[in-house]
Length: 477
Image 1 (tube, rainbow, N blue to C red):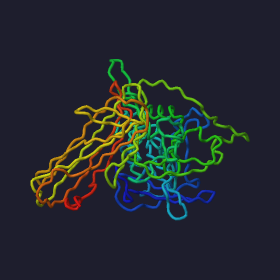
Image 2: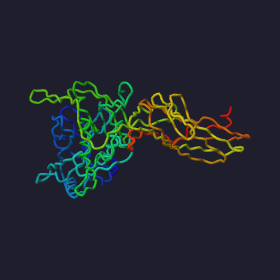
Image 3: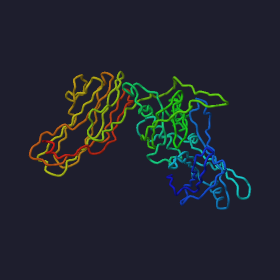
Image 4: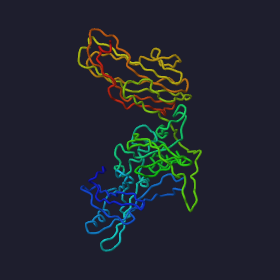
């Protein structure tokens, strides 16, 4: 459901003993109107974290909020009956904290009507409500993948978007942040940059999160189990705080002062990278003692399906692909490279003479080897080479889409990949053509394929706009 201001049925303001100001909204999905004033009990609300936060093996930490609402008259009392008879997820609570300028999202959860209670007394009396962030409810939901590359970020998005509280985050808001510093050597060349998130560079197939039932039929695991497994693999713990979910590797909480966290919105897109300050978050005070969460040096995890590392997406938004760095490619298992995409060519109105051809060149490099073409066969060579990969014959004022579908021979050696794909020249021109030519590329992708059919490395361009547009005669001068 989409939440708006008109769905806020009750609103209260509360100031903590330390002077922090909060706004508490009770949201009713079936309500349309203006918020009604609400008075909370003297203690405001309680935010509780479940599980055993002091246990390093406690990965998933759901949270809940309890509050007492003052019922002063019959009008206010209607909320009791409405909650008792409400459909699942109809009511929710959103809490905002004042940051000096605005009330910023701080916590959100779904009201659980079964946990509400009140005193059998005359007005005024208190009605006690509890809301949960929904992480525990993931135990009831079967996992399904939302789409895209099988990165861990997209697996997380597929799970978290099943929560009933997602509507409290806008499309560009930071929905969750990650901090993980375990890398594969294939993710970088020398040292890992601060902006590198291994969860975005690592992927695993869907079959990882399935099992065989008693009838030997493959079934998906529950979302909670998938989430817990991902957290265990990466030695992370997850919780909601300060208006977002956090997935933090516990190793980083030992001895660290500042941690770089990577933000993502509800669709898995990157928002902002923040630096958070750790203030004795590596342990807990308990009866005058300080207990460390010790770092984990190694996790061994039995996994049926091979973990893979996708490359970054191609992101050429200003022109053709020119010396694009496509990451590190391995060899030794008959790895090949699949190059896919579409070239769109539009010949505008005007005189095209007797026609002409357009030649495109491609260069593919892995390590010190270049892809070349001899006859109809692709080969690797140490000689610098590019290929006339496409020759389009323009003989009418139309728009054409040409598919690129190339599979290279197995790599000769491991090395850094480089890719170029450019318009090269016009050829076979006769007469005096005077037309506009537009070229655009759709969804160019590069994948490293294994002999067994797995494709662990991928790079895809999401750019679909026009790369350039010039009159033909301008290009000939």
